[in-house]
Length: 137
Image (cartoon, rainbow, N blue to C red; front, side, top):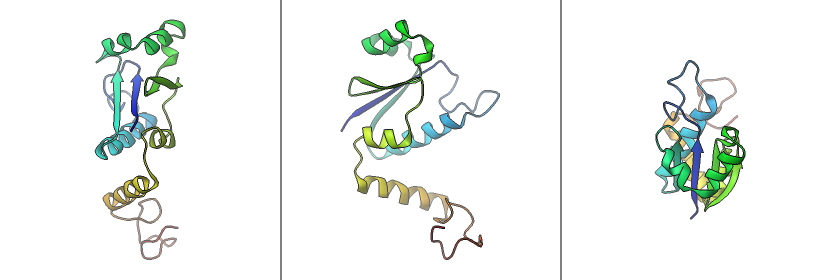
């Protein structure tokens, strides 16, 4: 299993909800990382405000910040190698890098659907005319 580390710019909270506007990408990252961690995947998020020492202690991250500046963040490291800079990884990236199997992905989707109360229309209202008996549209 791979170790995934996400180095984030300075912010007051990991979801971005505490600022003047909601950052949808931060909400997405928070949700997918939480789900993957709950499945036993090794993913860490480091915020420059809370953990500046981690940024300095990682030579590749430190070099990126020195040479590129704050534009390098967010920066994703997988097993010690920089995989993405300047943007958050996609859900697909995180699933792949965390070593998930097809079965793991299916289990994650099932868990997400059961938590939403409905598996049709992306977790929407099953009484919707496009849904029939809880099947996906």
